[in-house]
Length: 228
Image (tube, rainbow, N blue to C red; front, side):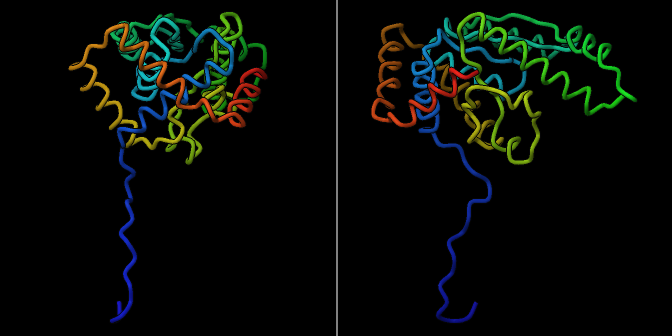
């Protein structure tokens, strides 16, 4: 750089987690559920960090009694299923298991492909999970919360009409690095702070009021949810 030139400010190559992001996302969840007119939320709980974080944010914002988590293994599930069950119990949300293996296998038998295709098989299972989630949402008057993060969305690491299919994506603007940091923050915070029911009600009211003036967006959110 020659004399007299002004240097560009250094760019932050790795987006960092900020504590206010928790409040923003939780307020978004509260507002989305209220505007949809639904009873609560439903999500797939895989045993991984993304779905665990979404489940935690939903439970903290609208209450664990309004959150239904489905484990959707292709078969027995193994360690991931155990992790999902343990986490759901820890945060107090309802947990059910639906084996999507027979559903996917039945479709494969009915639609005879020219040859086995690992991509098609994987996508079929992702779409079977989406179908189960929306069936649960429709029968129990809930909205589907997606669990994809921004890193996955940007590189296309999701399945169209599969795990990309949801009413709302609470962590869709968080990179994977931010997801890990937020999850670590909530885990340490949660272990050291016990909230009374009164404080939880007060917090949810505060989150609800955060979007009270965002009318154009709220109408759009309500319309999108009602079309599912």
